[in-house]
Length: 372
Image (cartoon, rainbow, N blue to C red):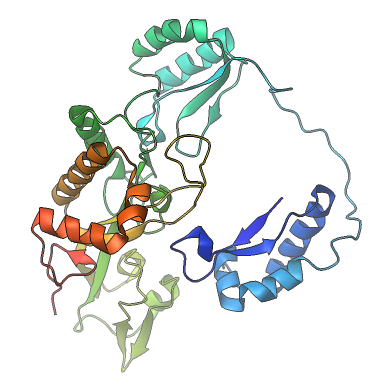
């Protein structure tokens, strides 16, 4: 078993540091216990593990969690029940569920199919697609027709399942991620893109619950706060709301460090005097993310986080740029991560600038000029 922690440069798994290399299974309990104890001792209130590692440094964490791994970790054994008792014959049936959503009627049909043709249980993958193991190939077309009756289809063409967070329903959502992905799915169908190595995700806010950073194309809702100096009295509520310490009070006025700001809009929502407002709002587009897949053609085995190329654009512009990228990937018969690795991120940015008619001076482009 291998454990990783993220370094400050998070653009590529090559920049991640090994926490512990090939930990023996019986030592894993001790390592996890050390890690939990360390977080309880050194962690701050509501601080995520990744932030603690960034604050203290990977070496400090590694030393703490790998201490005395050979010591026996006392625990009571317990029976872990699973529907899958052993390796099974047949294939794993993947069902397209855009945004990771299915209706109650569709859920019942999926359950019926798993009971009738599979092993009696359903697995929901990271990308939100229901999976049924143990399916006999001879039953595939029968199942396809049954799924069609409830508006579902087998995930065997087009691109990979389009995944979103709760954006349209979440209090933190800055834009309707589900609605945008449904429109993108129509674009995929119209263009006839057929490459399941291509992954597109959307997240309603920078918290990125929709795994946008691990997709060829990621779309994230962003908002830039502005300050009404007449309404601000320096109450500091916004300071407590900001999780990245991007706000301070100077001369009884909130001062926002836009370099630190993650554009989540939390400060705007919590200001009791409406002194903070939405100065800019839109969508960021990220490209080039991928998970550590290597089992099939076109999968390199490298993991990298997507990087932002465009900021604060409208839904309409996001759809146009996404469509152009999809046309390009179809032409090149590649997914976004592999193509960007081949030509370089800056070259890819230049291609987008030229095609979309954006200003060359923008490095991280914006279709809306920043108000001074």
